[in-house]
Image 1 (cartoon, rainbow, N blue to C red):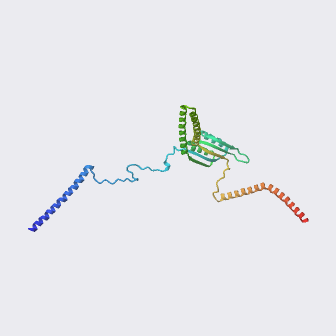
Image 2: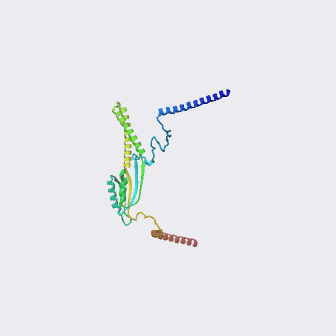
Image 3: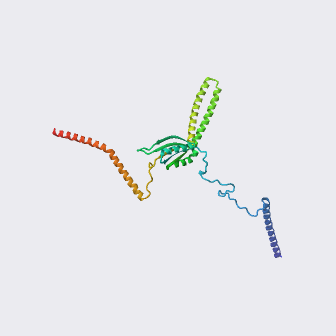
Length: 295
């Protein structure tokens, strides 16, 4: 009898445990179902989004270098120099002036030296070329002969330009205020004081405006020093093989010997005169020495 009640107790315990397990399973199912009804039907767990810079799902990444920065609003002064070997430098100088004027520029200085027996022909010009026409004009100038060298230098003066503009604006405002005060002045003392301040402000304003105009001219027009020379004026390049090296060495030796002979010819008259004075001095010294011995 006790065994029967023991078996019954075991069976009841097993049934209760099975019921608890079923209830817990139904709760988890209901929980998942309620979640699905609130957030929508999700067939699978959504993958975790990647917010790294490489993929950037919420926006594109800006890439580039400093060379991509727009410099069109910068104030730049461009200066340079170039040398060209021309058959006729004087005629090439006329062509250079024409090319510059057709580009909207001007010639600030011009010097021409025609060829003589003692010097080859040459020309030197200071060209002011519009900055936006510089590249095209230089390409046209290179056609005048054989280019020896070209050098360009750009200087950024944006900060200086902005500083001048700010100071000019401030002084203009100050002058306008002083003019308004002068118009409403009621005493001679106030009028004289305002006139003195106004004169000082106007003088400083005119000076700044002059500086700004000069700077604007330097920015708008690039300055190029052009040198035109004759054939043979600029030394040719060095030898590129053994035989041309021998020829170059022999030519240098002959030139050096010729230079020594020329120098000897220039010094010979002076050497003769020095020899004559030296001989006279030697004779005088010997005569004086003999007299001393005789005495």
